Length: 361
Image 1 (cartoon, one colour):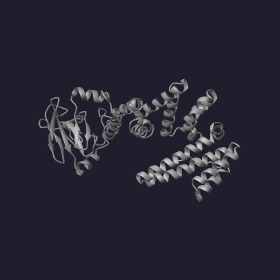
Image 2 (cartoon, helix red, strand yellow):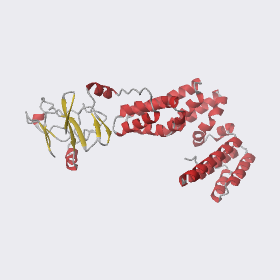
Image 3 (cartoon, rainbow, N blue to C red):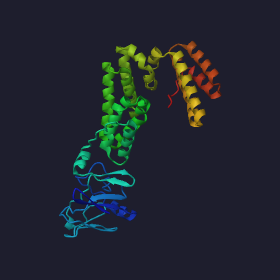
Image 4 (cartoon, rainbow, N blue to C red):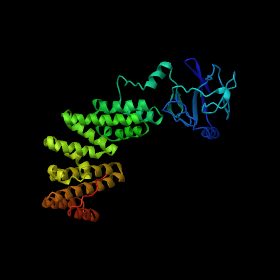
């Protein structure tokens, strides 16, 4: 079909499997002016739909579309394939131009006017007057899916910096799923990965300056975990241990998984509180089992047992490695009263010998 935007004709063409196979034969030909956002092999966001300006690059005529063949200019015989690449000498070396556009959903393509296209190209996004964090996070995922990477990045940055101002219930989502989506975007769009690292670095600066200390450390650890750079969390905790041990104690629970992976067992022993740590795991264990029972979710029940066994065994092993054997034995005894299981008992026996299990998950 043909439409018009800013007085210029635009083709929206469905490409068959045969069209796509022909395009692949010339997919090695790329053009400097093509956007980094769309797939350069197909010169489009979607391989089966092609959106292209109808005006011939060498003139102002509307190229005529022939099914399964491509585009031919009505005035100078210039021809182009189904990706808008020139196919004869009349066409020269310039491909058909592609307008700024995006797929709002599977059935809707949006072609902005000149002013909005300029804004979209610049990646300008302004949050609405009454922003809904959930909607903005969902929009960021949709933008990433349809190749609107810069817009997606800006929405992820906004969510990370502002979501809690509107709804504190996003605390967990912000540091788990949202970071995962942002990281996934960063794998496809390097500026987004740099923005994620910049957010991590800002959190570190806040920790070192004492600004919003606890939440900033939580941000720092969560981003490092997502990026698989737990060594950075360990380095910052070591600095806190040296400069501000009182603050290190407050964030020890957050840092503990990274410290254990780094085998900083002696340092863990300095801050671990076995009684409170054990009671915390018991409460979490019962909470997950209650959730599983209420919602008939066997996966959550399985996770409850695995998590309880892993966390308690780690606690026991760390106590042993810090010459606190009697506390380790007392903890193991209480844990078996909570859950009398043969495999769990074997895991605790191993921990009582100083063997630290790999943290889960």
